[in-house]
Image 1 (tube, rainbow, N blue to C red):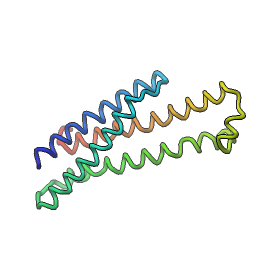
Image 2 (image 1 turned 120 degrees about the vertical axis):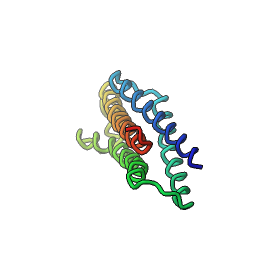
Image 3 (image 1 turned 60 degrees about the vertical axis):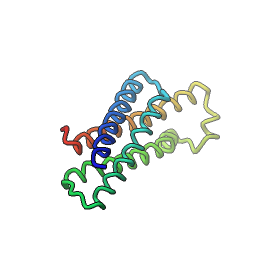
Amino acid sequence: MRDLHVWIGAITVGANTLAAAIGGVAWLLWANPKIFWLTLRAGQVLVIVSAVIGSVLLLEGRDLPRLHLVYALTPVAVSFLAEQLRIVTTPTFLEQRGLEGGKDVAKLPMIEQQALVSAILRRELAIMATSAGVVATLVARAQLWL
């Protein structure tokens, strides 16, 4: 089980590093590729799987260093916080522009609607790509790679 935990940790670092890299490039190019979101979600699932396996190891009486626990569990919190920030992106953008919802957005000229949607998606991408980078770093530290 311990070997599985190590392998899942390594794959988690890889998936989140890849998501952060894809997201960073996409942000620079003003793109929003589906592959980023798929890679990000895979990385998030791997974080949870790794935390569950680590919990099982603890319940079995395995001794894990305290710092490993901190660096292994913090990614769950980082991912959760990033999702909360992503969720409030749209309402924040609408409020900043004095818009109350979709009906107000629909009244804007099409080019302004597209610019607003593009800005919202770019902010969401930045938040989630950054979180993937932080998660990759934390899990790499938990693996004692850093």
